[in-house]
Length: 116
Length: 110
Image 1 (cartoon, each protein chain N blue to C red):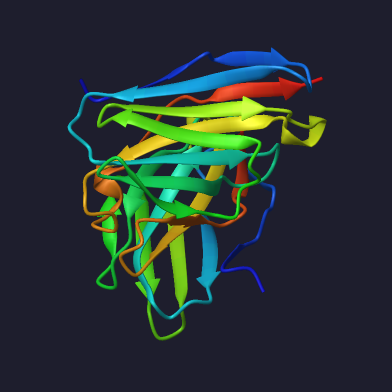
Image 2 (image 1 turned 30 degrees about the vertical axis):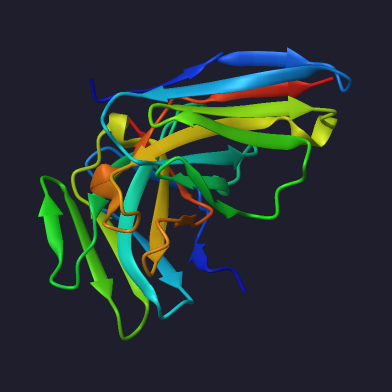
């Protein structure tokens, strides 16, 4: 299995809703990432988990809450989002330690989130 | 100044043309360099890594100039299927953090 699977593929939520994005990989990768991509912009890093521990938080607002229940799963919990948070949310995984090169990086197909 | 800079284009070229994309990076601690391809509404996919010695993969050639902090991608004999956004990516040190350029859009016309 050489895939990163993200669910749901599309999500529409209100500003008072609570929802979660899910990401799963079975490649034995020990680093997992959340990226956010706005239209016509490059992906921007949000969080890095290494060996199931949060290693990088790029000053992301607390309305985004990551969770790594085990080495195969990464969640992103969403609460009280704003319309400007609408974007494509990409999960990726890589062989650990991070920084060995992009050969180990695999991106999921993303969740397209719309906040109304 | 952005950490990774690219000309956003768009580059509109006919089939069979040769097209070159350039990218500059500002952090001298950058250690790994890549070109990714992203199709509309899809995730980025690794096209190739970039080395100082240059590397070639079929019609694609990538080159790194560390002294000038400059990366290039050359596409020969362009195909319609090459139409996409090409993202220049660096990793700084051992952070594992991919820093993306804003991307260069290529449109290959029949």
